[in-house]
Image (cartoon, rainbow, N blue to C red):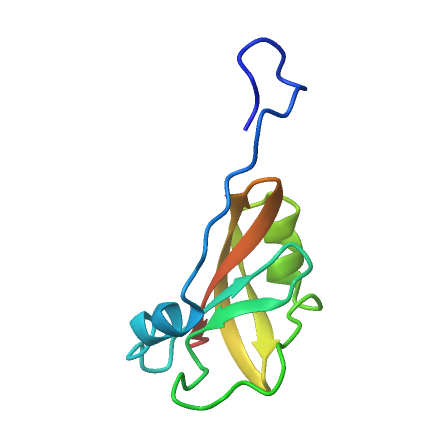
Amino acid sequence: MHSAGDAQDVAGYWVAIINLDGLEESLQGLGDSRIIFADHNGIEIADSAHDPSQARAELRSFSGLQSVQQALAGNTGSLVETIDGKSMTVHYAPVKAYPHTWAVILAEPSQ
């Protein structure tokens, strides 16, 4: 948050707590489609392919995906790329999570 006087002065920070299990539960039931949220480092925040009833051993990096790289660079678009060995049509967009940019990915099986 910036003060009204000077856009460079930080007046405070806004912090949010995200229920990741609840987010992943809400993403279930997409069939063959998949939604992935990745943080500013390309690390998974939520993935509709993850079963929320199973404990997560570690967070997965999606930083190698071109779609994630493009979204983190502030771009929106679509492309075809391989995710977990499957050819997917991927739609990507940046999400501002001040002060960072996160990525949201919608992947659908390629025809």
